[in-house]
Image (cartoon, rainbow, N blue to C red; front, side, top):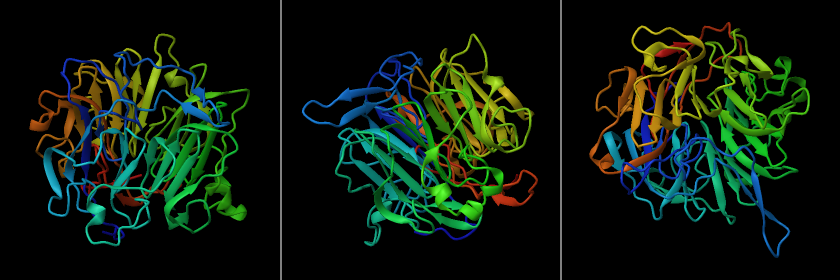
Length: 484
């Protein structure tokens, strides 16, 4: 299945859950999951404890008898569960086979082993098993599945990616997939794209259909992906980035070099390099939206860079941020921020008390602030839910998993991505239901974001077709063109 230029993309949702009493509390974080829902491109992991407050330091365990170390991070998922999918999946991103390309309610995906994390890319889905194996399905036109799909229909169902090392975390964007191994090594496959098409993966204009090792000089403890960029947090607390730089999402490339690296070429963008911040700042965590990045320092400060044309970064200005900016809108002595996620033009954030906040563009109800809500430049509380333990965003949709294991969705309803069984937009959180959700506690979900990319300048008014998926896996919506 291949994408065709400005195509209509389907949206779908993935869920991962454990068979357990729904009263048991669970948490999840973007980019990871053990029991979870997967939305278009975001994935969240559940923690073993009921609290959303997580450790601030990565852990490295010595591997006795060997020189290698084992890395650990609060975002790595360990609880195993099953995967559910819903929405539309015309290129196989639901993983339900060739004969099922649409589900109004969650459906069980057949996998050979239990899953601890699910991620939705632009038009593909990535699952990480309890044994550290990676399974993929969906669109493979740029190599995002990391495996051979020459056999007809093989992209429509989950199959294993050949990786010899145990994987502890995965991430995915529009056309790329990344995997982090237990010794801090990162593998990458697929390609990055910009407004003009493919730019390559690790080498200019060259995609990779199989996993390739990312050159790094220090162990990595967390990986997270935007639509076309990758961010790495290292054991030493450094931040590295690679991919497209047009909207400032790499945080290290000046505006005059953001168009394919300028005279320095694509290597400047594709090879991971450190994101530098004034002073001695060490980072504990990072989160990606479609075209932006949030990073949290070990002392609790929140930094951001990338697209903020609707204030989705929390900046007063709508200008692109090409270098990290300390976000004063998140500075609150009584609030400890534990998770961030972002769609095309909006962001969600979660505090340690389980309260959900939103900011950015308000159309279609994606902020969850009620009908008639306007865009917000600061985190604004989303009411109508019990305390949450995890968040996820599609392009124009939002999701939250509560500590009791319920899932709430709001935003654009096109392509059945909200799980209501209808295509109506929802301006406030609506609890998701379905036969497969009965007597189960949901711990995580991730939405995919298949969007046409915004122009690098905030002044551009070019219409881009928006694809969005709020569920586990990836989803895209052809609902309306959104103007940047």
